[in-house]
Length: 422
Image (cartoon, rainbow, N blue to C red; front, side, top):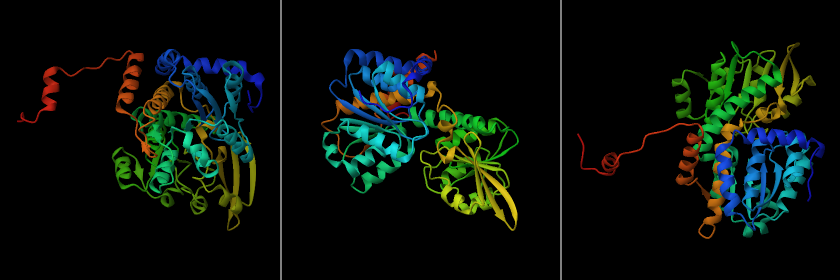
């Protein structure tokens, strides 16, 4: 079995972490139990480019229990938990290509290793795997029956490919599932982003002015959590509907240029490039901190900041670099957290297992749906089947010992009719 990880000796710690997460993932456990019996992926090769965390390990275990021959590589150079990678290799016989802090060349070599597995199904977190296959291995598209995409940035890229006619395989937008984005993006990103910031900086959030770039599900979640800890939250947006929603949720809304001099902490959650640019950072106060919780490290223009900085002091604290700017002979510091990469995975552990339980159960069931419908799928982006959504939600409610009402026959008839009114 081929693999490339930091240290196989870390496996004992990693296994404990995987088992701890698994205890809080009852829906995925239920899916795994059925997969062990039915083997929906028997004879299928899978390649997954995902954050290598304890929660991901339990997804991989589930897919393997369903018969999949699976290879895993990292979807971000800083998001790998090295002990989890070691345990997947040593304890679960999974080929893993991921090392926390890997350089760009290693990252793409790992991606290449996953592609050369010759997958029938792929899984992506950011669409790197699919993008490289389309560009450098187009011949593989013919044997790939479908792909799953689990993050907003990736879905945006794939919809752009579909619009241009460049997409050659069917893709399921797992990210757009209600059981994913409404919970994982809002509650998972909200909590884990704040967790990463606090671990990296040890800052007191209460009383700080926190500028949140983007008010999608991730931005909503982070804004809600920061506000709950006593921060004064400012939202920046380009979407008038989301900006209006933020205002009605009680947040101040303004352009980034207006927010730049006010913020103590800035966090981007947009999926777009240079949301915080050099002209914004010139306006920031001394000691301002900037970080990102969007998928790629392009949301903050760190290159322009590096070019303009009088000097850079790396690792003033773990995951914190200081950029010293000078204006009219006066120096000020702008702190960049986590190299501008996903702060919740760089400095913390990513989303809690309980919320990833729904996302990864949805991911696993979507993969099964692709196999079941492979003969009718076209090269386009598909939404998650409503039956899968409801199944995951009901299993999650059951695990939380929450009961809900059901429609009576009378109520069903009323909702299906048009004759009755006032």
